[in-house]
Length: 192
Image (cartoon, rainbow, N blue to C red):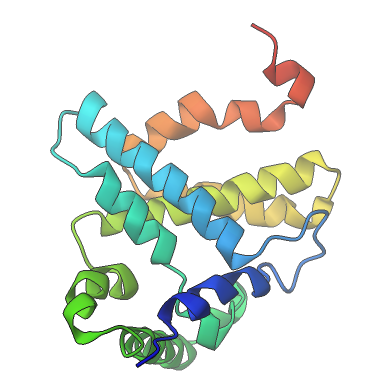
């Protein structure tokens, strides 16, 4: 029996993000998931190597790659709408769970158990994936502002405040060490 799991996953590239905002450079869910995975991996390495807390960077990266996979069925719901009311938030979370179930049903039974934590947000690195998701959004805001797009000013401030509220040393370390270069040009990045 042919299974559509990976064909569906490949469609993440067709789902645009930031639908309510004018974008200088459009971003899709596949691009966002890649950057979120890179950052989640980094946060796990920071947790493990800087703060000496056992952590699996590979697990964090894999979970981040799939963290928005359900949007294949739900689309990317803009944050202001997603959290407009408790009822709407609850309904969207139900839709996300349903989407995860639909994706899992596209896998052979013997593979499903391995994908459950990736598609349902489970696993020990869930907090790192959540933080990486916010960091990826913050970087998008910085890049848009750097391109002269004032549309992302408030989103940048709000996202940075959410990151600070996480009270995660890995996030603070990442912001201090790696966020400032996102405000530089390619020529400035190449300078020693």
